[in-house]
Image 1 (cartoon, rainbow, N blue to C red):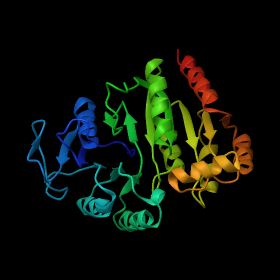
Image 2: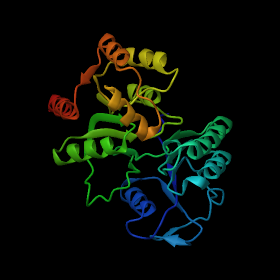
Image 3: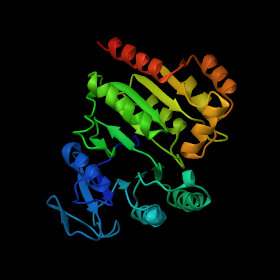
Image 4: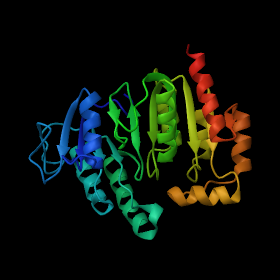
Amino acid sequence: MGLFDVKSVAIVGASAKEGKVGNIILKNFLQDFKGKIYPVNPNYNEIYSLKCYPSISSIEENVDMIVVAVPAEVVPEIIEEAGKKGVKLAVIISAGFSEIGDKGKKLEDKIRDFINKYRIRVIGPNCMGIYDPYKGIDTFFVDRERLPRPKKGKIALITQSGAIGLAFMEYASYRNIGVSKIVSYGNKIDIDEVDMLRELKEDENTESIFIYMEGLRPGRGKEFIEIAKGIDKPIVILKAGKTKRGNIAASSHTSAMAGDYDVYRNVFENLGIIEAESFHEFMIYLKIASYLRK
């Protein structure tokens, strides 16, 4: 069973107010998700004819996944509550964590404690999350009128940067290029490139994998190499932080250093991974991958 094989989702921070993050995400799920949807917000009794719950624990049925769009300060208790409930996947959209300094790092440490205690998997925080047209999952909090979603296809993108995820989505949509998944994982306190490669290796909807990589977490290099070796699908990587200045820029986004570029370059070459030299070239490879499908 894959990470995204979910039959029910709770939107924590759901809102009836147009333009709010919790409103956009709720409408995304209402449009495409075939499972059960539970808005969670103590300020509402009902949103769009759906019963709205004051908390995750007040939902009587099982919840497979939660999307968290509330202030950073309350996120740890939300994850603890979800863990007790038996939720298997949480997408934390909220910002205000390690990317802002020590105060945010302490919040992440609390979340990690609950991840370890309850074995809940987490994407984020500080991310756009998941777009999976096959599963009807869409946590990207940009209105679909402003940013049309790509059709179903066989190309996946994984990225720390939400901005890159949005640019990729826009490019694919306006050029009628289909995607299997776009996953933006932000500060990656749990799920990262290694986890996503493991997921995409077995994903029958994915034939090509595109990665925007700022840097691997310490100690994950060997695992990355091992999983990449076993993937019989083209992998294209755009590596951030190729220069000292770029390294600082990548670090400022997610508080993770981008690492020594020469090491990454050698690893990519040895694994047969295609490295794009620029975002423009990255998009050229995307067009090539889409043509190979025709």
